[in-house]
Length: 544
Ligand SMILES: [Zn+2]
Image 1: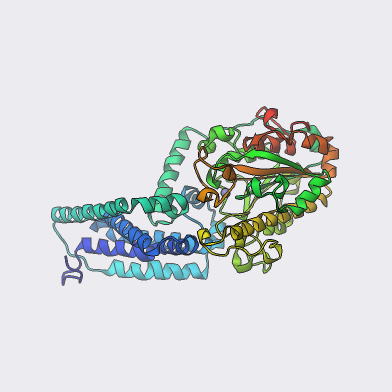
Image 2: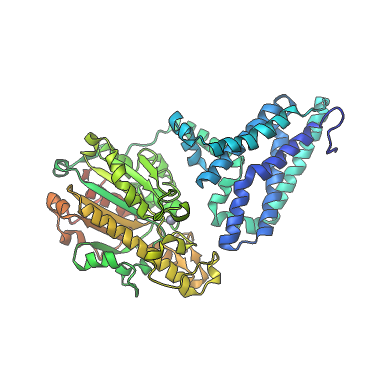
């Protein structure tokens, strides 16, 4: 095969291979960037990872393109693929997102105003370098005319060979690649253009499936109780990240990692629930589960039903989701959501990534923007924390919140002395304590009735039994990964209005609960009545 254009032009298949090479390298900068980051943060071997991914990706891309790109539509399809890769790469690098089905759903639901907000000079540069210039080159290449049958035979042959190489590379490096993919699920969604095609396909299949099976309405009878309707409450649900009960001061941990909350608890003003098990051992499982009326029994089927936020909204409450993490996993799809993860606040967002207190800073403005008529019926705010997200625990607390030193600042936890890992982790818990205490103090200063519920999404292993991080299958997971802190607080105004007391809030504090209880506790806290409510699961059941 010639690699210089024949006087009569390129062999069509060679051009397809050139396109595959372009997409595998320049078109996949986020993937290579992600591997580089993993190499730095997790000590994955760079060379084996890159060669393995390069062989798999190039083989699969070349194979797929050989089957898809034929002379009649070669030009437009090539430019389209360049456009998809350039835009996907731009958004992944600029916003730190990955292109999964829910992101494709976001894209599909984007309105023109949002598009205008996204346009920028840097995006223009990316389109120029990634689409316009290579596109012009691509469009202008002369191509030899070959008999159709001969071209079909040659190109499918080359395609099959490329696929074989890709699959063989995948197979031979399977152990490492599979482990890497399992540990870092986001990685698979950075592989362009397969991520876009997969997401689009899933979206299409999902949409056509939904066309037949609409999302089931649950809690159609939901309404705000009369006592609550008089003065609209503001209820904040804080979803913690990777906080385990074992290192929570309120659980009796040897260190005081929760000084602010412990002070309230000592005064009898805070209800701590020390026996709570998480639904899953990762965010992706726990987050939808926390908001599902089916709880743990409905894992994987959450999208088929309305969730807690839909029920609250239908009852007339306004719901806002503030996200300082990687998104709400579809839970906030039908409510107002604001991402605070990236910002320019010099104190709260050093190097661009924001500490969790940014959500508290944003909250008053977010509330002020609400439709007053609607907000008067009550508001539920979800704060989705970055919490103790690892392995870079030391980045989860600002310098003035670091009570335990020295901290592990290595990207590879295994290289650090065990106590420095725990120090960094404990500082992140202590920072969560600060966030929760400041949220409570802010809520206490409001004139309307206010309440807060906090629960962590799952725990974390800090090296016990050689295990780090989280994500073990739940049945096998050590208790550190599933035993999570949960607590509730209500303002004086709230207690008065509802006729509650701290005694009734604490009445079930020694009972065992799971994430299943959050759905029911939130209905109760928000004052929403529905037949979905199961008192037995509600830690605040004794308040009535
Ligand atoms: Zn998580």
